[in-house]
Amino acid sequence: MKKAIAVLLMVMLSGCSQMQIDQISQSQPALKIEEYFNGKVYAWGIFEDRFGTIRRQFQVEIDGNWDGQRLTLDEQFLYDDGERDQRIWEITSSNPGRYEGRADDVIGSATGTSQGNALNWQYDIDLKVGDGNWRVTFDDWMLLQQGGVLINRAYVKKWGFTIGTVTLSFMRGDAMKEAPFSL
Image 1 (spheres, rainbow, N blue to C red):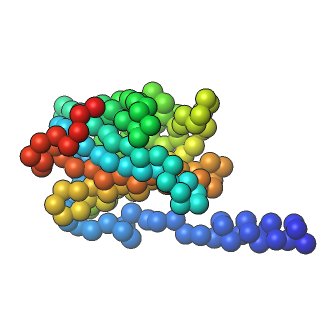
Image 2: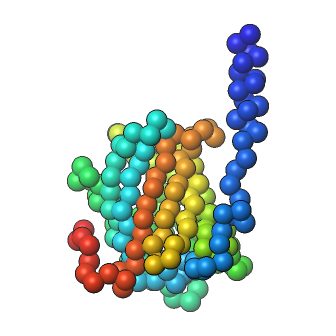
């Protein structure tokens, strides 16, 4: 009986459909990450565990540079407990709407697909958890909204199961009268 329930549960989980970029994207406003992230960008975010409990809050200051070939993002994180972190991305595009990126803590390379106002960005990363690391997969969905706000929902998965979500809101620095915070 336990085996039958386990098999049924696995069939139900594998039958769940995944989001497709063409199902959620809108034509406007168009998201071109090399334009959006060129310059100063700020973000505010939360991490929720699989039960919906907010475990961390943070802010990010991003210095982006698009040189015509490569987008470099220097991300400075400040968490609510005072911890600081940095990630530097190097992102390229070989085909329109397709991106590849690398960062020190990313395993291999990240891949992204962009269409209209949406970007789906996926990568494996060694995530700091307590005194150790967990290898997890991030499945990011970014949607550019009217007014220049970029909303990002990332599903954090381990062994194929969602263990939490990260929600971020981005705003370009040139759209603000003054810097919202200083890291």
